[in-house]
Length: 57
Image (cartoon, rainbow, N blue to C red):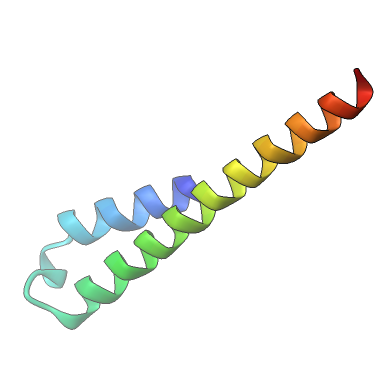
């Protein structure tokens, strides 16, 4: 998810047809949403890992 978000955001900055366009805002909003979702997923995975390692010890 994080890789797709980086690609989307980079594409919105590089593609000249998107400048001063509503599509640029939509693409950047999608990239932001994917970034936040991936950060939440990573935090959730870390918490689950720590809980499981705590039970196993």
